Amino acid sequence: MTADTDTLDDLFDAHDLPGLERWVADHPPHEVADELARADGVRAALLFRLLDKDRALTVFEELDPPDQHKVLAELRGEAFQDVVEEMDPDDRARLLGEAPAKFARQVLAGLSPRKRSMTAGLLGYPDGSVGRYMSPETVALRQRRTAGEALEVVRDRGADAETVYTLPVTDDQRRFVGVVSLRDVVLSAPDRPVTELLKEDYPVVEATGQAEDAARLMQEANVLALPVVDSENRVLGLLTIDDAFEVIEAADTEDIARQAAAAPWSGHYMSASVVQLARSRVVWLLLLIVAATLTVNVLQFFEASLTAVTALALFIPLLTGAGGNAGAQAATATVRALAVGEVRTRDLLRVAWRESRVGLLLGAALGAVGLVIGSVLVDVPVATTVALSLVVICSWAATVGATMPLLAKRLGIDPAVISAPLVTTLVDATGLLIYFLIAHAVLGV
Image (tube, rainbow, N blue to C red; front, side, top):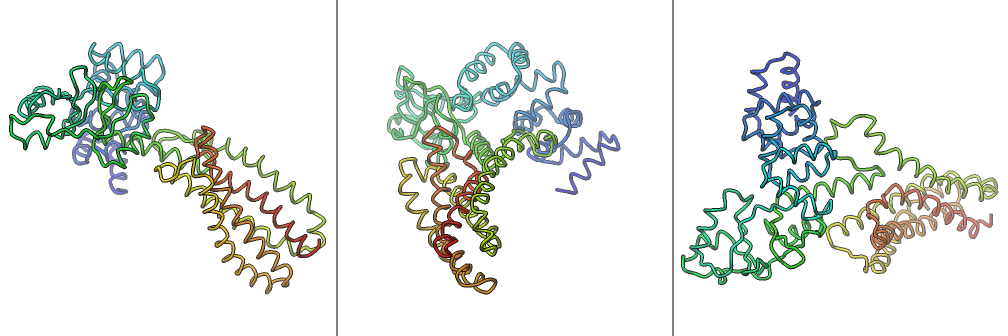
């Protein structure tokens, strides 16, 4: 991959257009899309123009909306309109949903009436909803048809659909009754009724529901497409597996950023500016500095204890590090379990009880090590203080780390916002409080 990238840079530097044409022809769409995302606007547009029409559309739909905007900003006139016109409706809606209003109006005005209507319909759904990601170009079958008639419908209308492998079946009012697979239709006798092939218990979602929940449902149910309906159970389209992967990737990317105490950003990392990256991180760092003043206050309050037994200060980094890591581990595990549906908010007490015991075991293991280290470096009373503190702090940290995301979810806050750094900062302050209270009890300071 590095050699490919270096070669591409050399071709750009040498203004070797034939070489660039060979490069885009020799590489698969996803690799070309990655290089477009990495490049600046001018280079990206130049590479894009070297693609033939069919491959250009495939590459363009591989890009995230910010990178699509970057390419379109350098295209003009007919080339610009051709790209947008040929996009799938759901991809076009996501592109325009993240674009400035003026840009979106300009694009919509240039579309054919049919595609403008489909795109405007998808843009009418809330951001992040299934409706923004579904494909409205769907082959739906009436339940009174036979397998042979269904196959004719697929032949007539399948060219315009994003997928034909999963076929929603409706009644005469377009209400969803189930699905049939193309495989079953093809392998059945032509006169066999579609109702005999019907899967009535197939999962279905409403267009206004959250796209992430729908994508996770597809993952759990192992289906390639999910019928999307309105409030009256009428079929509107399908959420396909490629769009579900995109939704999950975006959600996981956002969660990872928040768990690292940073604001998520869209687009390719290599194309993001230094200012953009710094802006995504600075707010959380400022908040964490403010939160860290709790630790300073605790140290000030117990200054007399530190003066009386200066050896206590030696173990502060050990205790805060152990507690912070234990809390971060529990928080990360809970956020992940929430995301994949393994834990629900009503499980809060069960999770707290489970993690408190996990923390207790971890603290006992670390406490045994701390007792040995403390006895060697200082003396047995201080070592005992450290060991007991590790047991309590780890149990407390694991409980806090696990329950905070669940409480956030119950309050309607993204659990990933309760990030590992925030849990670590909170546990640092409360862990020191626990440490000095135990020191007071054991050492009498």
